[in-house]
Image (cartoon, rainbow, N blue to C red; front, side, top):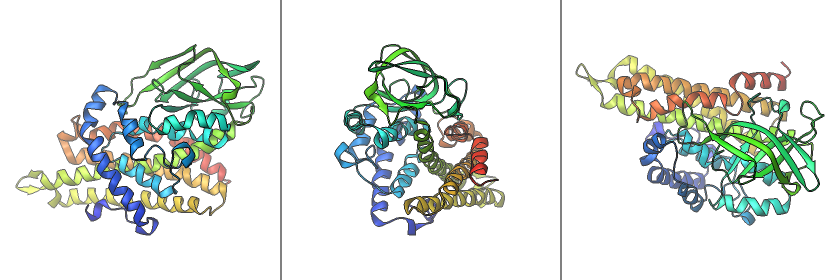
Length: 391
């Protein structure tokens, strides 16, 4: 591990964090990195990877031991996000970790029976969990959702559509944002409902994407799907805050992952610049290339330190909640812009090879936009941050 490959903030990490980093880096190098090109071209990856991830404790991070999990602090999550980003295959990472957005509402607000029924098999890698909020008529505007769940005795009857759902094709459990009071407007009358993947009336259509090829992404249609009332997550009509809280965690993880992918671009560009000889001299010996590399380092350091500092504040519950939400939004913007810059710069340094499929930088270049849009677009992040800060 070189100096440039080491996070510049050791005071945030304890020896056990670094031990976990070394273990996970070795696992990623063995179980993911050699196969990402083939998986990307195949637009899928083996379901067995979930079980392998469970065996090293990756899927259970942050969950109680009673469900097969391991309680951790926030810096383990940062380590995981950075190391899983090293192969530069966001599609694998997105689907492998779709439970990190699909299960938290269940853990925080589900009944004891619902938690016991759904969380353990997901953490074992036997089942897959996903989150379904976005609809064809609107993305981050959750308050405008149209999918309905009307109470009928001991079931809800669900009708509507969801789109851009990660792991949507093979998820066994889908946490769905629904409107249980169709007469309500805005955030009122929204609930969270866990819908089994084998529910009659649920149809799934795979979507073709610019990037994240290895991740299955689906359009879901609910046609009179009957879902037991026991699958309600939290209180009826009070689900809006559940999804808003879930977004904060997702956005911080996306920021950390974006930084990891920016680092992957830098690593590949540096390695290429040291090996590539033009006019009798390695590219890395040319000032213009060294300046490009240092611009990448600078932006990575700025984004990484912002995420680390924010994570420390969250870990120790420091700061005004509104300001923390605003900083999470801005951290996602900063990190994804850093990823965009580093992907573009790396492709430029690699030249013709940067345009070839099979390089990390080319793959990450295609995946930048989903990171800048997913979990809340850059424009929405800035607007939300401004509202939180009273601007």
